[in-house]
Image 1 (cartoon, rainbow, N blue to C red):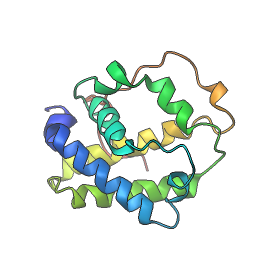
Image 2 (tube, rainbow, N blue to C red; image 1 turned 180 degrees about the vertical axis):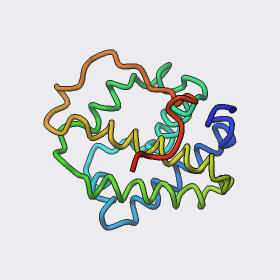
Image 3 (tube, rainbow, N blue to C red; image 1 turned 120 degrees about the vertical axis):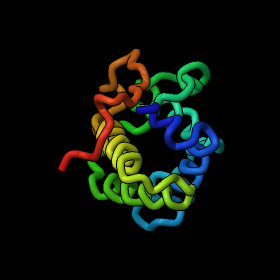
Image 4 (tube, rainbow, N blue to C red; image 1 turned 45 degrees about the vertical axis):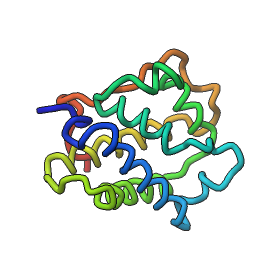
Length: 152
């Protein structure tokens, strides 16, 4: 299997998904909350594109210029429990795949939604404090071993 990054269509396709997901989150009454506070990076879509592209098996653009996985986890840490928000963000991601014109191939879609679910779980792993996140974590790259649908 090609990397998910290649299967989805590379950086431009990842950017389309990131932009569609971001727009859907901004418009959603549940998912808009994290996007409404001060401090959201003005180039959020560009940063998502770099991180998601790397995590899907593309170039290490995020790690080279923006930070490591510990940095990303700290950005999401300390926000308490937010299972409802997480599930909604996963639903919006599935819709964003359609918005971005990603092929409807069932295996690709299962791989992408499964990956996004696991990343959502990872982002919620430190609800108490950013100080709980270990230092030096590398961006987890999707492999054939970790690909597949989300656990039920």
